[in-house]
Amino acid sequence: MVSELFVSAPGKAILHGEHAVVHGKVALAVSLNLRTYLRLETSTTGKVCINLPNIDTFFCWDVSELKKRLDPELLRTLREFADVTNGNLDTSNMATLSFLYLYLSLFRSGELPSLTVSVWSELPTGAGLGSSAAYSVCLAAALLSASGAIPTPLKEWDHTGRWCQEDLELINSWAFQGETIIHGNPSGVDNAVGTWGGMLRFLAGKIIPLNRVPLLRILLTNTKVPRSTKVLVARVKDKINKFPSIMTPVLDSVDAISCTCEKVLSEMTCEPITGEHYNILEELIDINQHHLNVMGVGHPTLDTLCQVTRTRGLHSKLTGAGGGGCGITLLRPETDYSVVQSTVQDLRDCGFDCWETSIGGPGVQQHSPLSIKEESLEILRRY
Ligand SMILES: Nc1ncnc2c1ncn2[C@@H]1O[C@H](COP(=O)(O)OP(=O)(O)O)[C@@H](O)[C@H]1O
Ligand SMILES: C[C@@](O)(CCOP(=O)(O)O)CC(=O)O
Ligand SMILES: [Mg+2]
Image (cartoon, rainbow, N blue to C red):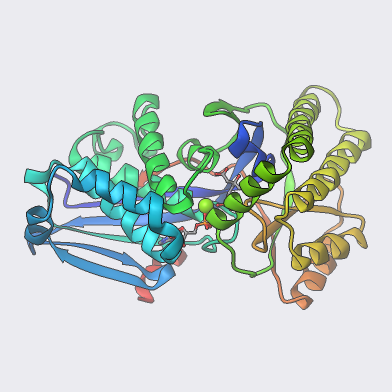
């Protein structure tokens, strides 16, 4: 088994389709150039340890103790425990439970190795940028590699550290299991972006990479209002159950927004980009933001984001689960640097974090220790 392994996976922004995607509608999502990193070290300490500095969580267990308690029912029980009672647990426990579930599932009980897993991220946790999925994708890739179920690409063939399609599908399916423990009922769009990167269309588990898309300029704003995806997804489900005939058309409309956006993006790659293309993209953002408010996942700070950017002629919507967290603002190619700067300043004055982001980062990859960005390692060293 490898003695040390580094992997990373990107966060994501959902352009359109959050929440509706959980109910079988289309979502368009794109990876960010903000990543979660994981280091796995094997040891001879007889312990399995997890260090999660972003959520201030550090645990070590004796492997022999874990083995003793490992009866054939344990995985099923752990799963049931996660599904049934996680409403009572705080979400940081879900990250630990998700690790234990993947560790116990991917190594056979007789061969539980001693190892230490440390995870750190450039993404804000619990803010709508898919930190839970990036975490689950990293865990799945590292533990599958360490168990020998998939190779370690850097060692075997690929200096980019990317896995082949079949291995990526396995990583994605285990990452989905991890997301299920953290989210309850994920659609799978976030872990798909974390696995493959780039922009993709997601519909009922079917993933279509969108290779022909224009370069979009996006401003990301973090309202810093904490929220839990699990709680918000459950809230939307309750609303749909309570008002099916009212909410179904809303979900259908979001589906049509995603499809229209996809069509416009594709047109922008095969004909000259015009102001009308951007007019449509902006209107779609406005309509979707109203729909998300109707679903009950808005927040006063997100209203503020929309109003502040509107005064600068820019259009915003929440991204991810909403209820606080992050929003995206579409910038036009010709949007002046000074307009961006004043908008960023206005939003910072509201107490938000705000930055222009680059999108389309690569999916999950293995790293050599030397290729990990210094500023990212710095995050780990702080703990
Ligand atoms: N870097 C990380 N380290 C440990 N756990 C993480 C990390 N990133 C995300 N998580 C897990 O994901 C949860 C947040 O997930 P979620 O509510 O879906 O928000 P989002 O995915 O939008 O960031 C955290 O409470 C934690 O359980
Ligand atoms: C609301 C949802 O559509 C996206 C959630 O994203 P995030 O966890 O807020 O980054 C849920 C899902 O698709 O599983
Ligand atoms: Mg999440």
